[in-house]
Amino acid sequence: MHLRKPGVPYTLTDGPPPRPSDGDRSLPTRWPFLSAEWGAIRGGPSRAVAYGALLLIGLILCCPAVSAQEAIPEFFPLRPFNVDIAIRQQTFAPDDREIGVQVGVTAFRYGQIEVRGTYQYFSIHTSEFRTDQHSLFLNPRWNNFIDILDFPKHKPLNRVIRHLLFGPLEDRAVPYLGFLAGGVLPGPGNNGPGHLIGGQLGVRFPVARGLSVDVGMQYTQYGVDFRGEAGQAQQWVFLTGVRF
Image (cartoon, one colour):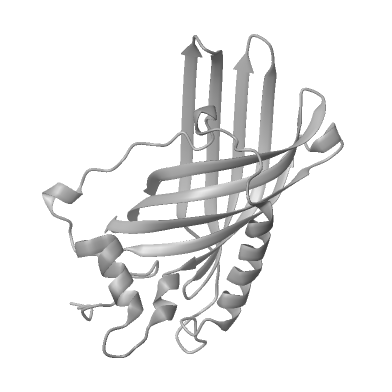
């Protein structure tokens, strides 16, 4: 039997976590990850996202948590993967139908760093117009990023933060910081793909072997063609669901 040392957080390559109690087994339902009720927020912090991406890349390259002695590069481990579906039909104010599908797999993993590839489809049908968007983007993530604050020795800051944020689940939580970069069709002018950039902050809770609950907040900015007009769309989305 393999026993984990107290105070060591779970990682993606660990075996099954301890069996949760009966009160921990309820899982949230799928989420409307791109539905209009979350809204596209104009004037979002696009420059802050770019700076945040550069900061994330710099921290990843300098992060002592990913040492060559412990990490082994893995190409296309695929798991965790996800298939998320959101369907919304409304008959008044407004009368429309929205469909969202998102499929993602893990393309690369190295220690606490993973790169996910994601395809996203979003469709809105109303009596006045119809729009379909296809997005493909990479999602680099830094798992357990707060563990870089492993100081001072007598009372590490990362342990204090974990205890305040996650309470009794502090050793099972896998907080992550991510960046999104890719393209979307139709792009501005409908002449090619438009850019898509963004960032995310979330946490994953392993609940069983190969199964975890994922909760996060995501911001994206993308160039899109809508009803013959080119423009920039910005969106905040709250995500919650299950990962396999």
